[in-house]
Length: 272
Image 1 (cartoon, helix red, strand yellow):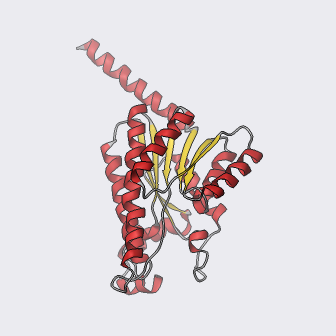
Image 2: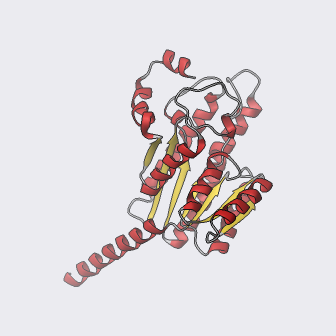
Image 3: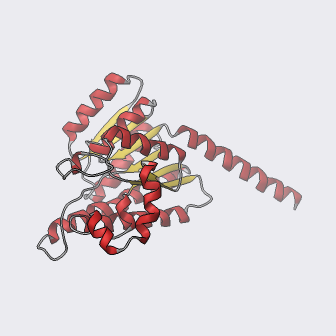
């Protein structure tokens, strides 16, 4: 009995030490949707920290330019790129495994690819709304599946899903399906987190507020919006802490998340 308890104690200490080591390392990072916006800026800021990168997106020419920029600024960083349409779910699994072969291990996978198309339900925009739902949820599920398969094989890893502050409530017009898809992603991420409790695999969900990117560049002036580098800096800060959930930038979204949950529908209509 004493020997058994000793072995259990050693195993727990070893597991914690192993987990702490990988949490500090996270050297090889895979980012989807890396050809522009948050994904491209995350790649640049992680490269500045000396991390190796596996970058994928549909627009390979954008990735080639980003790779060249990173290699010029940070010559000690390894950058590998692949074309990927996340709606091709078979290709998601193949691409993630290929990146693992390239780098040996994948320490962190950031499920970032997403779109915001469509409009009010029942206004003839079903096809666009469906694209948003599939890309932001079903294809995110494929990425999570592929990521966790790798992490289970390695017995370590950090899954990061990029959700949205809009995941907290329902919104109107172009945000209706977008918000619903991000809410589903947040719930999915929590389910994965519960399933992996007590393992060396961590799950973080990021809920960005208003950050100016290519996706929303044509929208009207939005209050409280921040530029991409500042927004991504706050995202990376939260990712590096490996918290369960983060609302960024912290001001005002850390407080706003509590207010939006109790806001009447009339306020939500005005806000969106």
